[in-house]
Image (cartoon, rainbow, N blue to C red; front, side, top):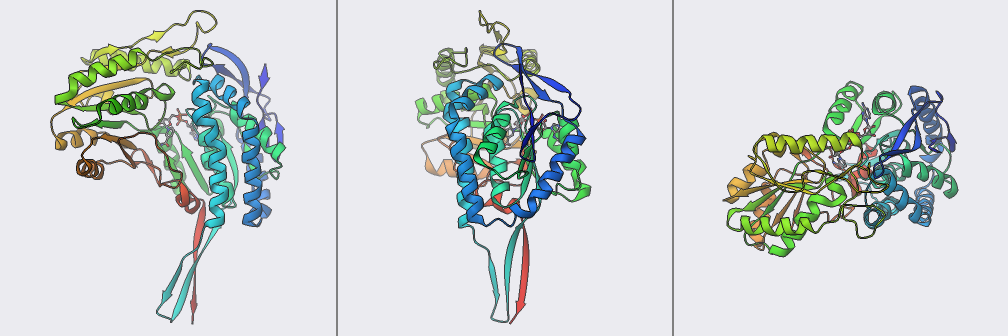
Length: 480
Ligand code: NAD
């Protein structure tokens, strides 16, 4: 059985306790590898290694840091095929999705920030010739980067790339549910010649590994992506330590379909937004608001589209939906579907676990599910389900749909479908969310500010926002 190792000070090492956790393949329901059950001792050693490495890494010229990161990106690409297979096996997602999204975006993230640091510039404020202010931006030290299981390598690199490019060193804690590609990344870092201690990866549980990492006095900066409850915990424990914290949290994103939308485009994009990665993307559109005059036609088309989606072997190129990430998560999603029915919702299609005969018989597969008949303010339409479940809600007016869309505690993303340009802009401006798409979904530009409003997060990452976050501004004033 494969044993995953921690990556500390440039070496692959066992956890000090010698303890390991089981790592499951969600498609088979079987344990296929072991994860270090790391604790405070491992975290402390990793932070010390990162602290030591910071001395020279922070002084390494930008061009040299950029070259090293470009080489890392090239080496990731060299192992793309292995990473695609590993991500799919570890997470349950179709290999075709990992090949299209997860794995190519990892080197893309690294190249983007390795290039961005070469084009960064600092500000100067001239006081009418009397004095001049200029702003230096310096890395802070050891960055703690904590990432979730839904886009494992992609979101890990989204954090470590700007942190390292800006001159910080990193201790990363990937999700214990999907540790494999982070482990493969450690081997890739060694092959690519990343200086020792610059990136350290410690595997383990949130409470045993994540907590000591976020609470350590020598991690002044924390970038976290994950659930809102964990984010609240991290915000609470780190506030008295005055750490710099970026939180990218959950969402309950509305997709709004107006009657004047390009109908076929709206149906196919809404379906993609609901079910990509088994609905396990923070940006998934899980509440579908449809203008009353086209509601029945839209419903019929969405059901027809959903019925054509294949749930099956993640290795099969024709598979649209693979397995959800874990047994616990599958049970949570199925419980939410039951609750929806108890609240008066009608399951129009799906709603059940899917058993695939053969060696995937014990896999965690769920049919793509469409539900209607629930009020916009019930639990199902307010809380994140994070699975292949979408609800349909009719609306009459622009004002009404804006109110319903904004009714949750979240504010991460939204999509609006209309051919009326003015309406698109008007509604986009009224939706409380950090990201709004018009007539599309998941179209990402790495330069944009990315993040959520309300309980979907604090701060923005992406482009120069990430470089700002991972550096501390220092103003110098010169009297002339
Ligand atoms: P999670 O909060 O359970 O775990 C995320 C990470 O935090 C894991 O590595 C986990 O081990 C760690 N962690 C848990 N407890 C911790 C603690 N006490 N201290 C420090 N670290 C701790 O989230 P998840 O279930 O892995 O991911 C799914 C969630 O992530 C969903 O809510 C989803 O919306 C959200 N998400 C948000 C974004 C975004 O950009 N806003 C992107 C992807 C996922």
